[in-house]
Amino acid sequence: MTHPLRSIPAAFHSGKPLGITSVCSAHPVVIEAALSLAKETGRPALVEATCNQVNHEGGYTGMTPSDFRTFVMEIAQKVGIAMDNVILGGDHLGPNPWKSLPAEEAMAKAEAMIAAFSAAGFTKLHLDCSMGCAGEPVALDDETTASRAARLATVAEANKTDMDPVYVIGTEVPVPGGALEELHDLAVTTADAVSETYAVHEAAFAERNQQSAFDRVIGMVVQPGVEFGHSDVIEFVPAKASGLTSYLKFIPTIVFEAHSTDYQSKEALAALVQGGFCILKVGPWLTFALREALYGLDAIADVMDGHAPKNRLMSALENTMLESPENWAKYYEGSAEELFFQRHFSYSDRIRYYWPTKDASEAVKALKARFAGRTIPEPLLSQYLPNLTAKYFDEALVEAVQNVLKVYDAITLSK
View (spheres, one colour):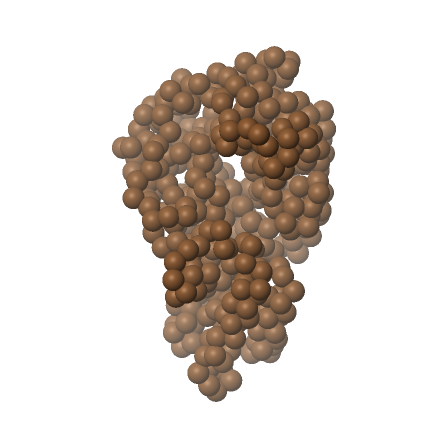
């Protein structure tokens, strides 16, 4: 069976660019929104988990690849979409979660991880071995990176299920979760770098007799000039990436994968697809929209109860983040006022790491209970959530996320 994503490079190189949205989140509302939209449009849903979120040791979500597949399957059953229409991907698969260990030890864990991803039916695999391990440079040379990637592909091939996986190579990506400083400009990946990356990976795969796997490399991660910080966004400028677009004709089997496309305009996203950046990753923007909806619903519940908003949900999350600062303290800086702003409203949305915690989950559950048997009046939606029309709690959350996904869906045109 031919992998559905192989149609993406074929379409671009035939002059009819198609794209696909890569939903990078483990939040159940985000997954539900993505699968519901896929059911509505008839287009495949691509859902990806990163090596830190999900791995054979559990990741920060506590889920193995098999667990994550079951998690997505349960939501698919709820939504009423067949898993045949859901593509599962693994992102940044490599030694990153264990880079504090010696290289061989970290790579052994990376092998176990990608074996678990492949065996669980994840069929889009981004190989990323660019990071140095203990005693190595922070960023490795292309040859070492490619050799380790080919090593992982060999393991993935040995553990694959019915459908042959497709691969994405390349590591010139924005900082996961957004930049840490104010943004001004970005260095776009050069065509020479693409040529070198492709050549060294092709040689490394051949050395391990994995030419068949390399033939299924459909994408390369590059930096097209998109990024977001705490409160600013660098929008895609096609002219700056024209060299990359032009060079794609020399590699007719691939397209580019763009990370950190969150908060781009509809026009910029369309231009990315037209330029060959056909796999569009989005994550923080989806949970940012979810947080906006939750805070708005908290205010609405208070008004419906006959008093001014008390921001109880925000206060609960503030306490949780202050008690466990490890997921934001290294990424946010400034005065007390600036840190408060960033904790709740940064585009990097590191608050997303806290929704699964016990305190945050209970706060959301308590908020939901306040809407039991109640319809949200239109004037309150107009005041606090003017982009939504849903009159009920759960539907409002899904609609908030889908409003972002529909921006992508309108321009990716993946049939």
